[in-house]
Image 1 (cartoon, rainbow, N blue to C red):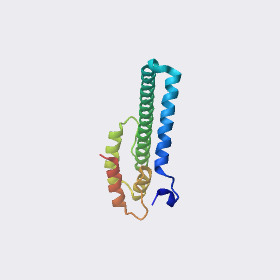
Image 2: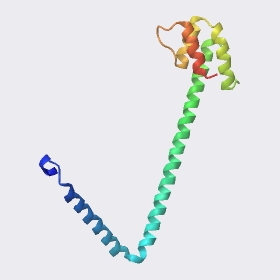
Image 3: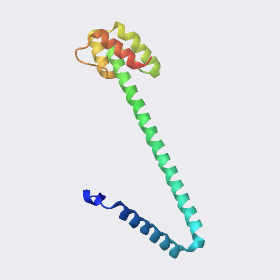
Length: 143
């Protein structure tokens, strides 16, 4: 049964139509540029496509770098908020030192401080006991 019986266009007719379009485009290019200019035209198109790919890769790299920088700043802000909730000073400390100080302070912190720190760092879940929140805080620090 032909495809047209199912409401679909005849595939053979489409392929023949596409072939004719390609043939007409090739003839038009030959008439416009001539056979001597075709290799030069192909090189120009190749160079343009290469430049486009390089530009695209550069833009993707810049976007990736910006997103990475943003995520690092956001992580630092969360760590500083958690430190403040636990009463840990965060000035003039590297992020790793601050994380270590938080991990040490979380064991001695009050329940309210642990809840505030878990909310600041983004691991808070209502109904979780304080011991579980302490574990999640330390685990999220990747110390």
